[in-house]
Length: 67
Image (cartoon, rainbow, N blue to C red; front, top):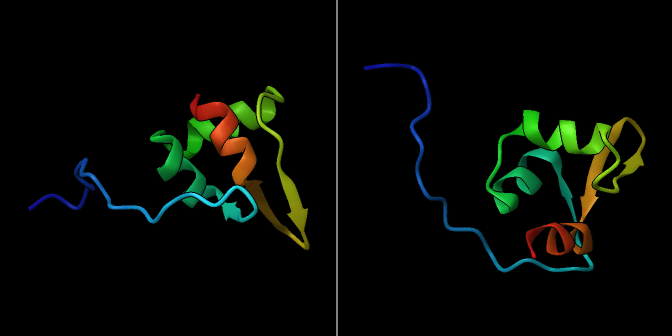
């Protein structure tokens, strides 16, 4: 058995636009990988917030990008 993750659909709870999501959660909602999300952040196509050393994506940004 391979140790690589296989692509599978994950059932996500409903998105809350007033909530903040970590990078992994935001990537799951946007159905992209973390690397792609970091590229979007670097290109300033998605707004993030930093609390301490952690970076979060507002739910409103996820909704905006998913349209």
